[in-house]
Amino acid sequence: MATSIQGLAPGFLVASPPLGDPNFDRTVVLLAVHGDGGALGFVVNRAAPVTIGELLSIAGYGEGLVEATPVHVGGPVQPSSGWVVMVDPDLDAALGSVLAVGDRVRVTSSRAAFDAMARDVEDGKPIGGSHDPRRRMVLLGYSGWGPGQLEGEIAAGAWLPVPLDERVLFDVPLEDRWQEAYALLGLSPAAMMTLGSGGDA
Image: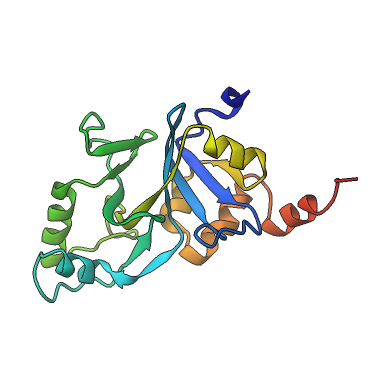
């Protein structure tokens, strides 16, 4: 039965209102891996209280790096691990440190990606947003599910699987991504709450 919702990656998981788990309340998760062995994804609509410049300085790339773009909280698992989500179809997904999320989006934790970002910050090049050709987004931590766990949560109504949409991922402001991800299916969180409160008789 579980095979009916296998292969949800690449895509989004949109938290149902209310989810109950504070780690995932009102979140949009970029689902990068999903299969018999479990699932792995990254929350993409929650800012961390640190900027990219501050993170690079903490990581030893030099003092006073100025880049005000916020880092994201990718999830509760290994919150000190750093990841870069970007549009870079030429980045080889066969490398052990690169995840292909669809045809264009890549996720990596490689030192090379952070080295390149530090060089760009030093050179005054933008990180993230429409002025960054690779639309880079830095995340701390990730979200993981064991075998069958995500399928169970979806069946219980905790998550709504939604197709991947680069506009929502990169262009929509953080505070609007949850509602915009629902809108991809022509739904709204309020409508889902209404549906969830009835039909149990």
